[in-house]
Image (cartoon, rainbow, N blue to C red):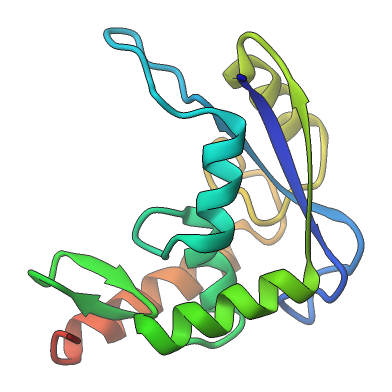
Length: 154
């Protein structure tokens, strides 16, 4: 099933953000002009809950906001919070993250409308107008830079 999902949190991941408010929206599948995506809402939401920062921009953002240490893993090209950090993030999400969704045949259209009309501080794409955008972009860039300076994790 295709659609848009939205995330809000019982406890805000950063002191400048409001608890209980919609902070992020995402889509499944993403728009692909020349092939069919295998993603659907269920797979995408599950990955955000159980995956890692390399495959989930939401997890990357939340981990950076929560102060987890980003590390290069494997060949050194992927970055995650390591086993301990990802487990801590999954636990934080289990306690605080709430997700809702709506089915939509062209979710990328609805996502663009939502980002342009709502205050969604955790979305970076299409969201330069948001007051939190530059702060979040800097936090993520600093975390990546620190990760590049550390040895590759197992």
